[in-house]
Amino acid sequence: NTVKMMMLLLTVFLAWPSRNVAVQAFTTPAAPTHKRLHLLTFDLDDTIFPIGPVVAEANDAMISRLQTFGYTDANNDEIVAASKRIRNELREAGEALTYTDLRKQSIRREIMRLTDLQHHQVDDSVVEDVFDSWLSTRHASADKYLFSDCVNALEAIQLQHPDAIIGAITNGRGNPLFMPSVQDFFHFCVSGEDKGVFPKRKPDKGIYEAALGTFYNLRKEESPDSLNWIHVGDDLANDVGAAAITGAKSIWLSAEEEESDLPSWSTATKEEMERRAMLNDSAKKYVSSKISSLNELESAVIHILTSEG
Image (cartoon, rainbow, N blue to C red; front, side, top):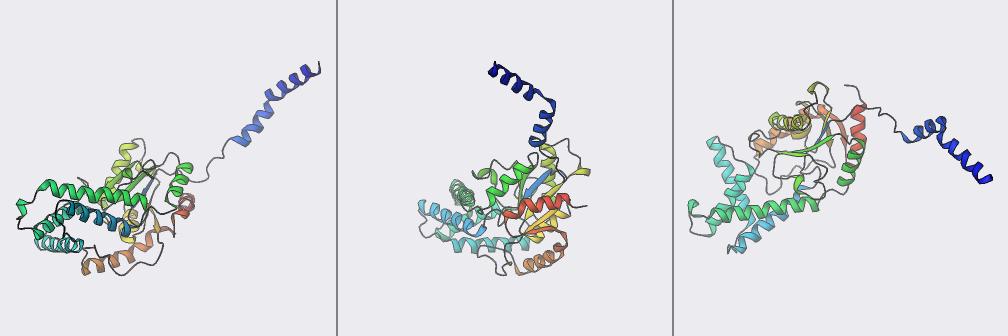
């Protein structure tokens, strides 16, 4: 009888309405006090991985592949020099070239340097093979060299903003969809190399407008009037300023003082760098939040979403 009585009391307790209210109070998450995040976009190079070692390993793979085809004296310094000559020729002609085609042409010229072949005599399949080796190594190295806090930062964003679309906007050939450690976090990648984007690379608005177009294709129900979009990047001109004038709030990832020296593989001219410095200065007013590492990203996002305007 005692056992039956205890079972009856337990049944009444579990069914009691006030208990259900109490349980719900503890288990139902509180309504968010910030605006909803619709779109979060990232730059790639020097934002989620360091570009220096990534390009260095890709270049090593390119040279190694050239050597397997018998070009044992292939040299990356010669390829960089060829790239700069090609860019100068294009400037004089008033023409533009994708980074992909620039690298392929540089590979072709290196083969010509090492042989008696003319431009049209170089085997296109060899050039494509060598380039593919460079590109696949670039993706693998980018995944290997991801900043140590990158995955945790993306997990935090995904947890706190599960409905947000996450994309990448880059001028080059990096693509998180080909990087196993982060590919599941990203919904899309827009590159300055893409058909329909080139030559509108950062800091041109065109590449950001293309990213918005991709977003609205994924979320047709969203209205531009209520869009909460945040862009994260390390470059003031290319990321902060360009994204802001296209409608985003910008988070500037500034881990250290900007280097004044160009990397050895850069083909930028002195004039281009001077113009970039001016654009950087003018972009500072568009910084919505500044962080020194991706560990601070979620806090910066919440700060922006709870701020007025």
